[in-house]
Image 1 (cartoon, rainbow, N blue to C red):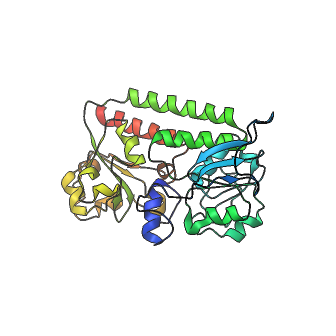
Image 2 (cartoon, rainbow, N blue to C red; image 1 turned 30 degrees about the vertical axis):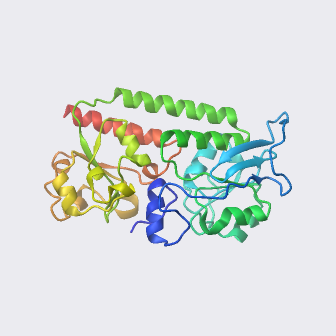
Image 3 (tube, rainbow, N blue to C red; image 1 turned 90 degrees about the vertical axis):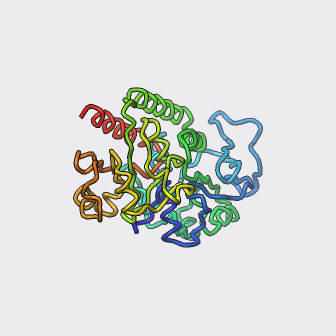
Length: 326
């Protein structure tokens, strides 16, 4: 099993690896208390009139309306996606600590904190005035709330619009609204342009691999919807367990489906490649292997729903163009 990461792909695998880790049966999101969270224990709602700096501000997060009374200067991020987004919107200098899986950009203040095994005491030791996380594991949101620590729960996005909304949330909560809107606008345009330019007349099929078990993702998932923008047909949609979004496929199923394209999102964690696939029972004859259409993805880019989704879309678009002209 691949290492657990805070991601729409890692969310499912986190449930499988860490039974009872706080996720719901749906891998992309979590359920949290809708009670408002505030930057100070006494505040329960947003002030009617914001100051010259735009604060206080209320952000509608996964844990309900969160009131941020003033511009946070000691942010702790326990979500690699949120970390990337915070730096993208210009809040990097406000971040004092990130979790052990946040590795981008390079200057992130990485720590031993965990988003999947949150330690409230360790988090509080960082003296945060805002904590951002993707999973409400072991009731960490409520626990931090009781200590007067404001929390934004931004669970794994299930569609692009949710990813855009989360970036806007982080911009508003950190006093970087304009930059966040700039990031979102740029992402929308780039992804829309890439999708529009992609040839879709060949009706290519594909297989996306989350890990070497192998688990995959259907078109109903965030990653599946990205591929859908480029007119690709997902073989996992016809899997017996497809209703769950993340079916475990058999070697026989993939071999019989014989996808035109294979995308591997387990290259870093699990060392998968065209060569390792060829050693699997019945896979050496796959069309994607014969035509050299096995695509090595960056595990992290392929499992996060932040600004680098554009990089993933570019790679998919390039692969589709190459496959349709070869």
